Amino acid sequence: MPTVHFTKALERHVDCPAAQVDATTAREALDAYFAMHPAVRGYVVDERGVLRTHVNVFVDGAQLVDRDGMSDPVGPRGEVYVLQALSGG
View (tube, rainbow, N blue to C red):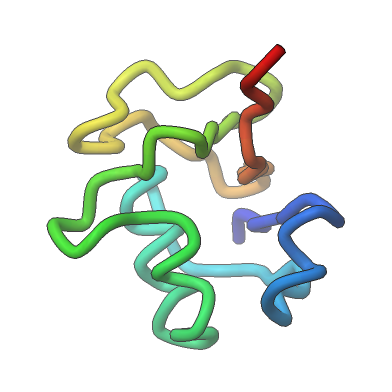
């Protein structure tokens, strides 16, 4: 089963331990994670379920291509990393 990970920066705001989920796409992985940890959802996606502007997702080291649908495939031993992008100057 794929594993979903979050950066330490996000852990300052909400409890988000790494967890294995049953999924074949990034969307399924995140939805399964949010079902287990609903408080994390609002930090990652907006009310429409779209990734927030300053959130990036990587699947097995590659940045998510489909930010809207999150249909990027995730293998059975895949690693999904969620992090907040840095901005500003």
